Image (tube, rainbow, N blue to C red; front, side, top):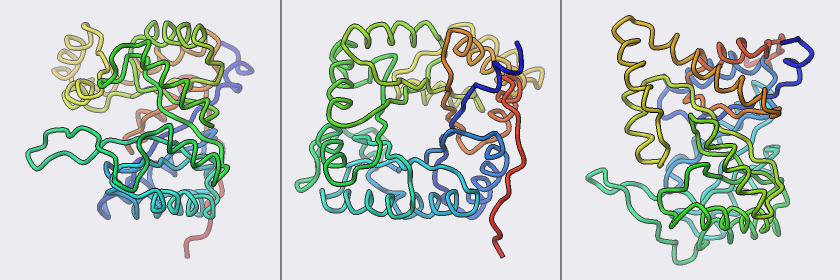
Length: 298
């Protein structure tokens, strides 16, 4: 494939806010490694129930100020009043955040680790649609929302899930980022259904390089994301041969190559603050690093 085609391929990355000094170093390492690839934007997640609120703000500040990246900040309405949630959004805007990723969010797990169902704060937003309406009215930043090629675990069915996505976009969001998926046919079938439902906003595909297959199996089950049957055997063999990272890089690059070949121009990577696989996948796709001048931290 020619370099002209490859140069038009855009990428974006999701990071999560660090909880420890070691994790902070890993985030900074991720920004240093992936920033030179020229991402369209990077997003920073927001923990269940707002548990990472301060860390999220600190991470955004570092990525904006030191790594000079275009940052989208996640925002949820779990465990907070309307005023508290909008205050965070104003903080984002004042820090130069370019976009808000508006999510209902998942409540913190119970003491035994079991997931809880969403219960709105008595003075909070009732869900993502109400949150988006308020952000559109009072903050005015571009917004992305979540989309699910395979229905959200709480959805009655896919049609209902797509109706909910349309309500979020109609409420003021201008694009959606999908949950990760591994079978591109799931994504393209989802695009077809969205088009039939009257959705014409960009639906950015979310891709997850598999850093740890065993952890992925548990994580995917909670998210309602299916794993191709042959992946279990492939990763079992790769683990025996010490080739798990090589396999993960190859599978992810192949998936992205197929998405680009079918006409997409952007892919969003869930990096898990592990930059190497994502970096290697991008290089395989022809997305080349350019020198980036980092701000002086002295």
